[in-house]
Length: 447
Ligand SMILES: C[S@@+](CC[C@H](N)C(=O)[O-])C[C@H]1O[C@@H](n2cnc3c(N)ncnc32)[C@H](O)[C@@H]1O
Image 1 (cartoon, rainbow, N blue to C red):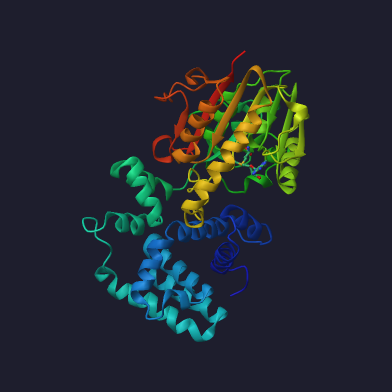
Image 2: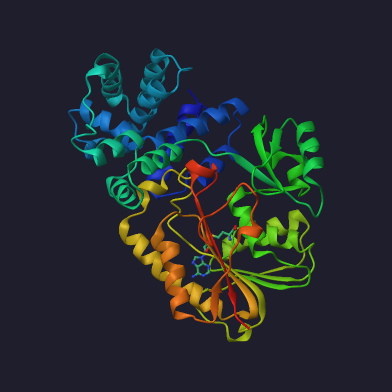
């Protein structure tokens, strides 16, 4: 077994994510970029990594039941080999049980020969007693039941049950463990959506029109990673979820305007805004992290956008030079990310209740400071990729209470016909719109 063994690569990725609290998508890309595995193996590696992360609490519950060694005492490599083995046995019909066990034992032998017997024992005992493992019972403890079944931490399940009720919560939990659509935005500065479909088909990518945004394409199958395609390198598209595309449509930028995007990296929305402005006008794209701004620059260059100025800047600090100057300001705020658990399942284990409190303080401050840049009659957009009220509606309510010069604008006219929010703002959920969970709110500074 060499280092190009897909299970070994998946194991290394899982350990890296756990030890370094790293993001799954970035870590997977990092490892795949330096390996020579086939397209089929790349898909298998992603499936293993996402599958284990999505189902970690469930898999650990089983390991805890079968192991005499306490979870905390099981070495991280062995624990992840067990998770990988069980995931294959339970969730992957295409992998025979014997192969899942044998490959896990082989992997364990490479990592720590002495402990391969332990791995063999746990996996084989699972196969023997799987029907007798006792899981939490819904009637006795619905929170534990849902937490284990859908691998979400108990505090989050409890919170969502409280906020949304049982039916909604269960659908949301279930949707969070499903694969999201891979969606791209046609760069209409260079190509129409129809012509892009043709070009991608020629490159072996099958895709269809999106459901919500007029530039969106949903990728249905591919035999190459998107960033290796000629169409990608020529800047004909940008990977972006449809929910995120709606933000720029709701901002509704016009040619010649001055737009400030205070939290812009990696530039998904800034570049879309530039596209909607026909690359005419001025966009100031700021972010607190310099290295992330390199992505804004690289994306702009690839997409042929010249009106974006990127600048490292802390959005909490008022910039006196910009007060009252912007036609439109976008605050796409840092958030808990609970709307993108499908893309980054590790988020559900990393974030804690105290993070939501800290984030909401940061969000309201950024919003207050950034609102100062809006000119009279101008527009302020607040968006997040989360579904927590504390980071969304409550922020807006507080902001509007304290800033009487801003008023909420109804966004129905900016939305496609198939989205009809009950409120003036928009809250999307993965199990309802099959997009990321997203919040978008539009405010106007009264003249
Ligand atoms: C949701 S992401 C932005 C995504 C981006 N708008 C896009 O569409 O590609 C939030 C960004 O806020 C940045 N950020 C966090 N705290 C900040 C601060 N105090 N000032 C400016 N940017 C900040 C993060 O670095 C992160 O890139």
